[in-house]
Amino acid sequence: MAGVQPAVTLRPMTAEHAEGVLAVFAEGIATGHATFESAAPAWAEFDASHLPEHRFVALDATSDASPDAPAGPVLGWVAASPVSRRAVYAGVVEASLYVGAAARGRGVGRALMDALLASAEAGGLWTVQSTVFPENAGSLALHAAAGFRVVGRRERIARMTHGPLAGEWRDVVLLERRL
Image (tube, rainbow, N blue to C red; front, top):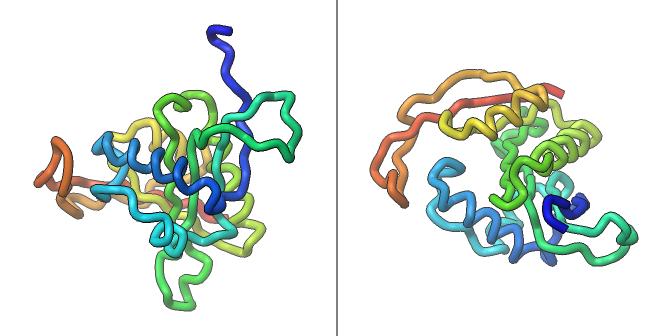
């Protein structure tokens, strides 16, 4: 039926979601406004760099499916990475959140962010931070709605290595949410 959106199910991210997670990541990379990365990593590298207890996927699912039924494709994902190996920063993580183009504007990003913040708080973390390109208005709005504050703007922090912006210096906005 036209205009009817499938239900969304949030689940902990596992290796079974690898293909969909990396495809959504690659889609975000291609925009030129999501990350400095030039390509999605292999799953083993992705898996090793993100905390297993603080990563989730949003899956397409029918509203009448049972909670144990297999869900459809990955619509988006969120994951946290430690910002430092130093013990004093053990409660500080950096969030990465990507939503596929077809799922944007449906509340998928907010559902994923809420899941991450709940798991972070339950896990004893005290700060979730993100860096966002200033041109990424959707991501900045999502972070503001989720209670993040702007810490500052890091000007000309790095150069793009890919796409139409290759070689250009980019700024990022540093955001944080204290739990």
